[in-house]
Length: 181
Image (cartoon, rainbow, N blue to C red; front, side, top):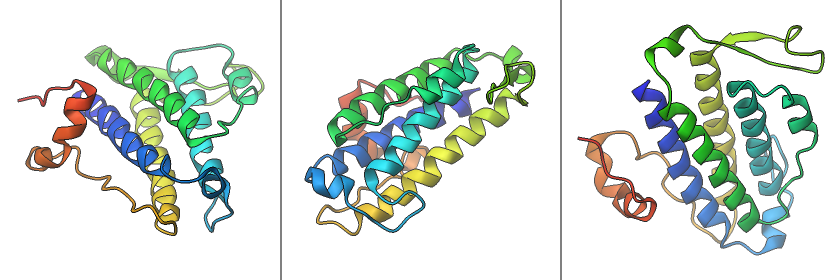
């Protein structure tokens, strides 16, 4: 379970760095058409946040996860998106911090529109692995799109190895986190 908490925290750090860089862009650049799966930074990053909300609803056993998905209102600005993504990331960290060995066998039910009983069921560890992979995949797309702007893309992959701790020291202090020994 420590791995999931580490990934959730690394996820927050990467989102914080990426959204901090994107926040330096003019609004027009945030919404400008770009080449990627979702054709703008705004659409890509809002997709990450919307999917996070759906999966967090499933992980928490919320019965209104379809309503949560369909009611999603995209963030209009990078600043708004950063605040909302941080709230989502904190929710994921809290979820992962509360996991125990008993959760190894837990199954997560999804509602894809026909109710929880009719939807897919997945082992919790697969759901979390998918959620982190989904974030990393689309965050990489946003990182590549940012490279086509005047703002330098930030380093996003130095959060897990202890030997990289010097590169995340400022982030750790800003978030009030202490490096585990």
